[in-house]
Length: 69
Image 1 (tube, rainbow, N blue to C red):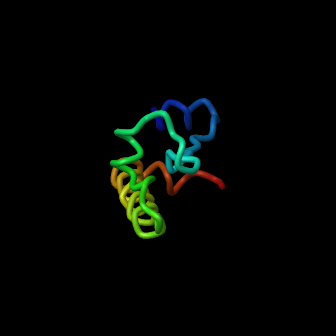
Image 2 (cartoon, rainbow, N blue to C red):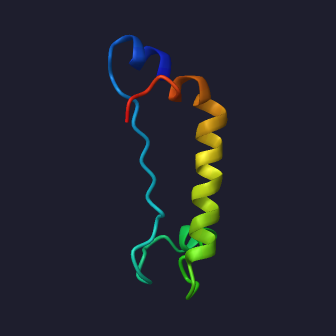
């Protein structure tokens, strides 16, 4: 996907939303898995972002080097 977008001059953009907006999410399974019910979400959110950035880097490392942000 990244190569085809690049060939057409289209920028590849990644977006991450941490998945919860307070304590009233309708998806209890996701809230539990993402740490949304915990009072201090910083460690979990930081760990999730770290894991996602690592995955993007491992998967698209060569393509990221040629993108302009």
